[in-house]
Image (cartoon, rainbow, N blue to C red; front, side, top):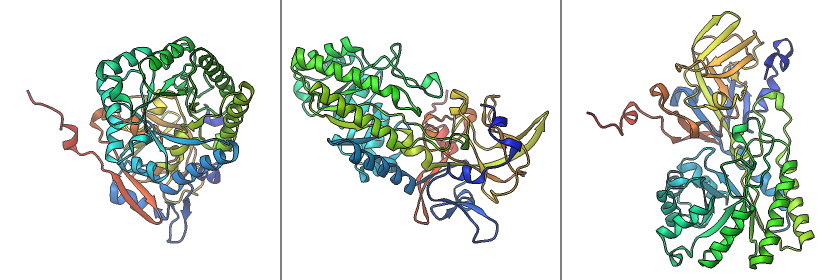
Length: 453
């Protein structure tokens, strides 16, 4: 995306950029120089205490996102409902605990994410296990600690019974992942998951075989799950996938007598990452579309209304997060003004992977006039280590802090130790206070697994 076409005359839309920040974010003008503040805590003091790069999560924004989904489900769906937090977006022990305070299911992929759920004391019946190629260790961890296992492929059922007899699986509820053959329009082809050629899920014939297998072996299969892509903005393609899933349920009911109890049409509703995407369609539009299609689809097919579970993903957590970086060097190279930061693709690989564009504001005096476009890049030995391109910003000096909004999803969970980078500290802010929920990695942490020659 060419930012020159978004920002006429390189003007900074302060109100637009602030709208990307968490719900409790303001420019605090009460103590001298204006400073960005979240939940009553100024970002300058947080960076001073915890260092940079620093990730900040706002509890109010997290709670408000859950409330918006719950309110919409209550309004538009007459049956039982549930909301699943996607651990893959960002997960630590404190976030796992928060999901239970809000009555959410927790989606875990593999034994590693399940460990966070265990540390967070998540109840077994609130854990949903996903995975396209679960190892035997993953399956063992799921059986030992989860209540719902989403079966991605037929061999997975064989592996499950190789590990455990059916009697040992009576506590486990199975959902089957359908590949509906239709993706949604996302920002990048790598975030599409529902197309016929996708590596995820099973086609209709394989789902039928899976149901038959489960019934023959006494496995408790209750649900159909599908997912069409992540970060989409128009729910229309979901309609055809819902129709496909309900037609399949009718076929299964006629052939096997199997009854659908739970339908999970995935998630992936998008968010605005920069001001050009505002206003973004609200979650109510997404929830209403799904609810009405499931309700009318079941009525026309004379199916009982299933429990409806949504997996909102980034739309629960992305805008709650802000990344704060310190500028180390400002340099000019040909037509570009570079702001070189102390973090980059090691904590946020999304621009390199998906060419996603972000916005930003200086932490101090964010209302300063623009001084032309900048390129904000990280310290890594990669030309692709660029977080933001051609973004109008004020005159920035080395040592200043910049805040990047909408940093709550798929940053830290996809991060790395490239160039020996240490993963950032994470704090949760609420009601004027900040709580450290993940420590910054130390140099000792980097070599903890190493074994000398």
